[in-house]
Amino acid sequence: MNEIRKYYLELASKVCDGITPGHLDEWLKWAKANGILLSPWLFISSKTGLSVAEVSERISPWHMEHGKRVEDEFEKIKIVLKRSIYEI
Image 1 (cartoon, one colour):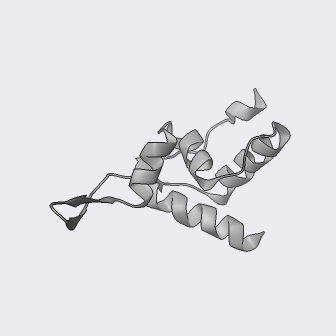
Image 2: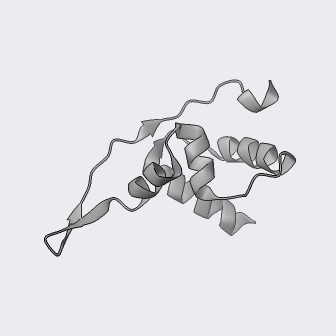
């Protein structure tokens, strides 16, 4: 499970600034309790408010233009630890 946690947090750090293992633990607990598919994209989406497609674009920030790879740049989304919405 450690490798999976590391993978989730590594992907999230490409999109989010301030993401912590606590954020992941909280989300995993909520997702498992509610039968939600465990996916790094869904985790990041839930923390940022971005769609899964937008998360995917930010994880792999590039596109093809005239047959050449063009790197895209995005600002990271600031995540702050606050009272869990999952506890409400």
